[in-house]
Amino acid sequence: MDKRAKIILGVFFLVLLIIIFTEIVRPKPLNWSPSYTSTDKIPFGCYVLSNELKDLFKNQKIKIVDQNTYLFLTEKNAGLNTNYIFINNYISFDKQELNQLLNYVNKGNNVFIAADNFGTVLTDSLKISTLTEQNVKEDTVVTKMYNPVFGNKEFAYSRGIYKSYFTSFDTINSTTLGKYKKIEDDDSAKVNFIKVKIGNGNLFLNTVPQAFTNYYLLNKNAQYVANCFSYLNEGTVYWDDYKKTGRELQVIDSPMRFVLKQESLKWAYYLLIISLILFMIFRAKREQRIIPVVKPLENSSVEFTKTIGDLYFQYKDYSNIISKKITYFMDYIRNHYYLNTEKLDDAFIKKLSVKASKNLDDTTQLINYIKKIKTKPVHTEQELVELNKRIEAFKKD
Image 1 (cartoon, rainbow, N blue to C red):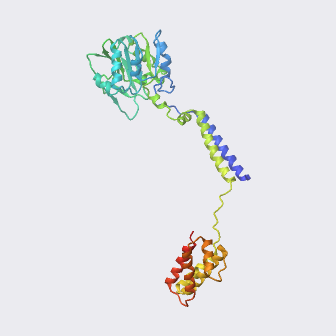
Image 2 (cartoon, rainbow, N blue to C red):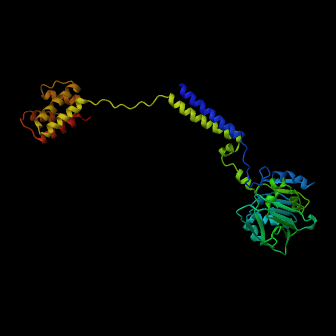
Image 3 (tube, one colour):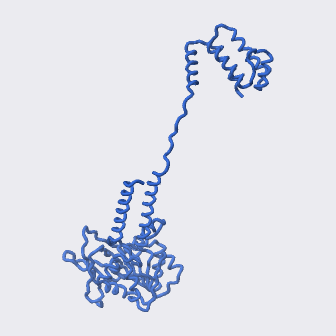
């Protein structure tokens, strides 16, 4: 490697190191995507809430459920007077799950669900409907609780919030527990928290799941969460960690996805790829180049002979061609069978037949035909063709 190549390589590695160092020290942008998992510390994760459950539900068992709702309720005895909490931006149950969940509530347990959307199966079954206001810019919304025990305290939300509320529900079996604060141009009370009585238990539905995330719990919203959970039983609390948007994003379906998700492994992978590219570039220079294929020199004498033969044939000089053909054949016999061709008698024919392993009659006919046309002064094209045919037939194995 010459001096110029070393300088270029050194500059390249220096730039690469600067890029890597910049990426390492550069502060990571805040991830505002919804997650709601118990392990996510991003703004819209539920790490803070999952760790505060033991303080919110003192002297109560807290169990994390990381499996399908149907399987959990059918395979395990959840007990009575227990609570099942679901928090996510979107909660959807299939018919089997919902049947098991409603049966669980009917026995005297409580289910708390906070979501922007509850799915068609649940809303159709309970005859409820919701609406989410879509605004171009984020507006601050304020929630209040109906229960006078909580006072007149208001809780404001200004980022990542979707103003979802109930537009209709069964007022006979349902109780309104919370709403959005009225604004000047809207006198309607938009309910965001209800309790639905089902058998011996209750189903609580809340349309402000963001209120339970890390971002708002760390911004003076813990009291709202405590007020919502105060309606639950004093038994075991089951925290759903399966129906989570963040969990779906974290599902690892390939080894590379895991590698690229880990900072150290990601940079190790990138360095490996860059090293392999550099190795191939500089290794290729040291390898011997492909040797070009050189065509062998053509046998000019053969080409010359063909050309002369073509000229004879073109000018219909059949006698000359026949003479040369016979001469060439006699030379062939001398070189291959080591026979004297001066006398083409019966003894010669017998020896040629034996050495060439040919039929005696065929050999006799060939030699006699050669002797016959040698005596003729002028020849035809048919005689040339016939001679060539017989000679070629003789030469074949």
